Length: 373
Image (cartoon, rainbow, N blue to C red):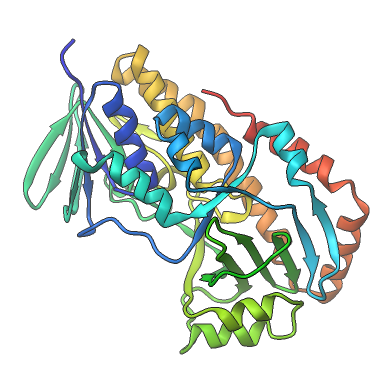
């Protein structure tokens, strides 16, 4: 068998990871990225044990760990600072492996460096097609063919639109999110605070800075003239250190939260979808990147042993049901956190405080975090 070839559409986390994994197995790989250069700004990311094991299979796990720190003890508080739920990070690490936190830009830098010779930026894919023995990608520079095309181009995937034209578009989850990284501050823990229709979360980064995020139930597309002032006003009377974080913030990013309705398949011909292009989910379980890299590690392993069509069929069978279940779990968690009725919120908080949440969470997380390839 000659050298097999793949075209990866999209130079984000899943696309670069796919290129690294396949190139390491002897494939000829090209990554086509629409942006003039690959960058990421202004946010942290948590990687659970399953994500780190998947990155190990890709070949960059240790490098990523060098940029990360273990997550602190965390929990859920009410807006006055009272703990509703506490989570012991050491117990989670003992059962599943540590959760680590790092800046998204550091994660992306690791992947960009490893895939530098495989990536071409400034290429917008116009269409994708698949025949029995080859797949083709058309862009402004011409047409390229390969044994495999991987759509890793995110929630608004051009590959998905081309190959799954009847697929339902992304749907709004009902809330928007702000993200910021504030200068170094001393913190003792991490976690989220839940109020009526709003949440605020934070976690420490390796360099002492603090990654903060917030959500609120608002119509899609609505924007404030000054997003940082809007955020400060919304959380002004919440417990410290939330107001202190926002006083220290210099800028903030805002994105409405969307998810992808279930697709009937992640594979069509010699084209496969991975990551957000296949199963974009709300961020409530911290599994977006983890599930994407699991996709990549699984697909690469299957391609070691099978021809492309057989490997793609097995990939779809292994990954679609699992990832769509994670999408549903994340949706449910987000809806619970975004309850807005004061009466419902008070009831929710009392019930959560009375339940053995940590043991329940461990049972719920086990099917996700125990992933192996």
